[in-house]
Length: 414
Ligand code: FHN
Image (cartoon, rainbow, N blue to C red; front, side, top):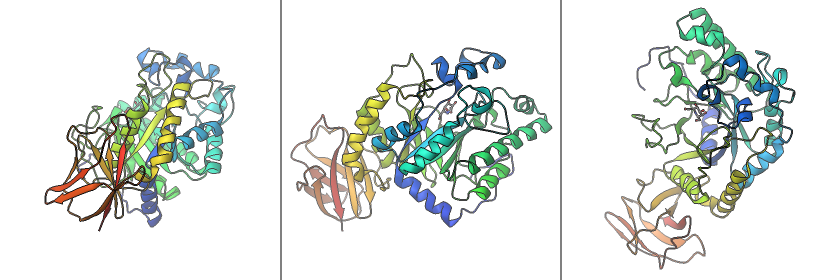
């Protein structure tokens, strides 16, 4: 733990919480959903900021938010078919608009739109029916509220009022939607020095629902009271997305969030679609580093997920249906990631994932202390020759297919 300028929450996770952490690690793959009134403009979730739209005018977007094709069951079906085990949806993003029925504000989907339905409620029901875990993203940062703005400038009373507002909303989110797996905070980085009163906020969450896990995408070392460490556009321990400089990987469950194109919120111009191969590799590499992948979609203003994402998710689903055994319920950190790929583990079975076949006619797995009993190909169960030396294990597959997304070998340990 590092030093913080504010009071630290006291925290001993309950048994149920520790079990929930394990279950979370087993799930490996989740769907992130960024959906809000910003979706109407098709220019990403930061559109108010990037297009410099005044807050009072921005609010008019609520009048155009009428997603008549929204079908929570369809979203859940798409996630489930992709092999995703949980959904994390923006209950409120930085624009401050609450995508749920909140009594703490009128700036919410029930009071401010003609849609008048609570999508989180519908999603909660659909998730429950299909056995998918539901999680809520919640922005700490708010671009519009006076108390946030005044509080930011040092007005203590205003700041306290803002924190109380968040507590009221978090209470709603944890009481009105059944069991919630994770509360996923974001926006801390806007006020790095502020006293976010995590002692109060986290204690409230753990008191209301001890098994609900807390994640905070603050891009710093985990704070006491948190149950998950997040990495944005990054694998744990890397800093390719530029958010995790100097952040060390903790022993908490790990989760990397990533986009399917570039933007989080629906963006009409964004054609940077990642391929199924790239995304499966991300999932496998995350698992190899002992982390989950939270893969984002930004549904369109009509409520549908765009067809490019749907078809890639379908292909990912074909992969997870066939090879899920080598991902779900596994743990990583077996070896350091290699140029050719990575390794995941379940008890005495290691799964060797060859993502980029090496030029050499063998795979070398370094630093494996345990004695290998047998190696077989995942597809077809063919016995693979191997040689174990002090430095590691050599596998000699008869051939490696460059086209294959991931050639997997099952390695049994004595
Ligand atoms: O600013 C947000 C962004 O809009 C998006 O929600 C991502 C998701 O991880 N987080 C923030 C940037 O850190």
